[in-house]
Image (cartoon, rainbow, N blue to C red; front, side, top):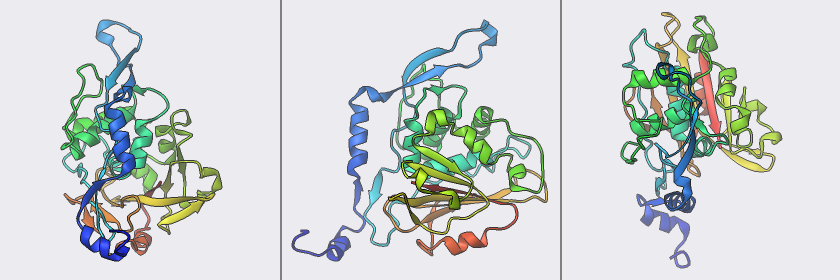
Length: 320
């Protein structure tokens, strides 16, 4: 067919067809037929009721899939398959734990398969006391529940559908959150770039992931990374960037805007823009929306991002 018809004609007839990329198919099959089904976990949960006990090493099945967003759709308009929605976290009690960090992690990780893979394949074992296993399990449970996975009884990462418990569990595993309030975005949301540096320590992620304070800090020294996350007040200005000869695509942008009138970290507006690898156009989901919808502007979201750069706004850009 490729010899007889040009690409434009073929795309007209394949519109709406679904497929799985070759790389995702191979990784999924290797995972299902090899020892990679198990992960190394250090169960370091406190056991005060039974006296002090050394952390125990376990090898258990993942409570989450190795790949996400693998089912793609042929789409000549450039959008691809609709993204799964993430929870609003609006039902968490007003006086409950801060949810902005949990919302941000859900938004970035569930939208970027490369970042999901980097976390899943991190260098050191997973720990009960760390956030990664809990977050991947929670995202799978709440966003990709159609992909049924049986959780080992001995796994410390059990499924939990109660939002308040999920937020509390993730916050317990995060770097210390200061209870100060202020007019700056960092103090209002109770985290900043330094917090992200602690979330992704070099011992686990230095070879695959980098955290920068602005898109302007992305340079040739980061060309070997798989994922670069920008955390701060600056907005990305381009959808693609060549870094040291390597092409990086903007995959996810998250914006948090503070409602500082009430000084309550639950009162924030948020929106995420995301697109699939090798697709041009962005989807978006605001915090109060139940589904992800197509951006009318397609790939031209940068004027919208610039207009959102106001006092109290915090941006997260993920390129891969």
